Length: 306
Image 1: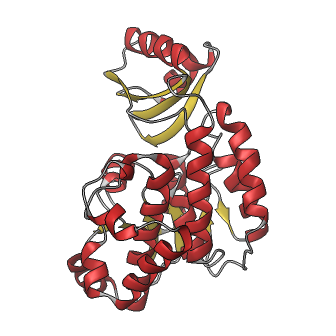
Image 2: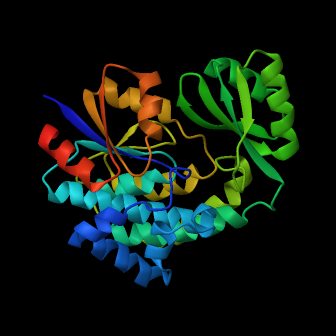
């Protein structure tokens, strides 16, 4: 029996125009996007559909991306496509939790707005950095990074692609050491802070307070968490895991491997871009990955999988 996973991208996937056709063609999507505008007092249509500088600012990006991805997810479910399990990369985990039934869409949107502000302001600008390391084994990266204070692994994206994070000087030092040790490329990323590093521990503690106000329901289906790459079946663990997540490594590769091990053979990436599909090609070529980023995709995917 085929098992389907809904997977959601993280920050960086956003682009102007995302969700516009959903808004125009679906009453459900329109309701979610308009409600987000009301809840946050932000013009979501202007933020998501038009070219603007705010869309790439963490404090706005997170709410925009979760709003659009959840609008897309609700349209898919309305058409009859339901997942057996969910997962989301970093920010995308909020969509995964909502899609799995533990958090309302409204609460997910409100929480990530606050998360974005906490992450944006956690470390003074320029003090922290992130870098993508290409063409090197996980263990080799861990060994080199482990010898340098102030830098850790932020993301295990897929074989041959790891992201490191930490104090700017430490990341620069690690980048040089990794290149010298044979990494194909090390690229400093254009991000506003050292996400998923211990430097964000304080932001995680503040986020815990925000999450305490959120009412969680029992999970309808499990999701796989970034922090441990394990299945979560009890939403009483969710708040702690989400607050730890901002300062912990994102174990995306391990999460996908865990789901495949459990029999998931079809992954539906919901949101703009094809980042997760690209990672999956390097994790496992045998599984099926479908993308939903426009209304046309919805019809195709529903027809094929329902």
